[in-house]
Length: 83
Image 1 (cartoon, rainbow, N blue to C red):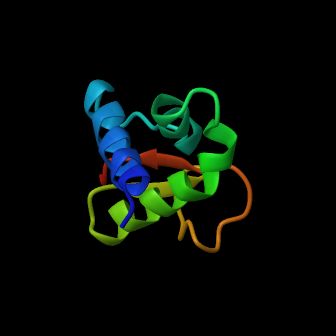
Image 2: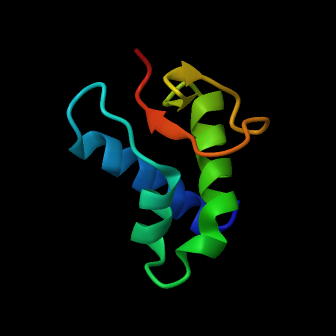
Image 3: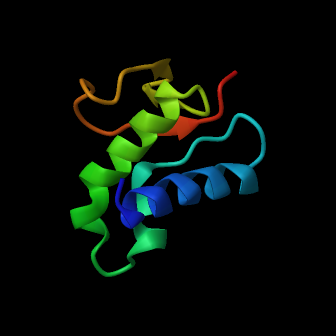
C-alpha cells in the first residue's frame, strides 16, 4: 500500500475521532486534509481507503443513511464509526 493510502486511512480515523459519536464525514474531507490542492485527484483513493477501513470493521460507509459497499455505491457517500 502506498504512503498516500495509509495517510488517507489515518486521516479518516483522525477526523472521525474528532467528531462526536454518530457523526459522519465525507471522503473529500480526508482527501482535502491530505492534499489541499490536489484533493480531487485523491477522491478515488479516499473512497478506497474508506472501503478498506469498512472491510476491517473500523468504519461504515453510508449513502442516504444506509450502509453500502463503497465499491458499488454511485454518487456521494459518508463515513461513520460502526453503530
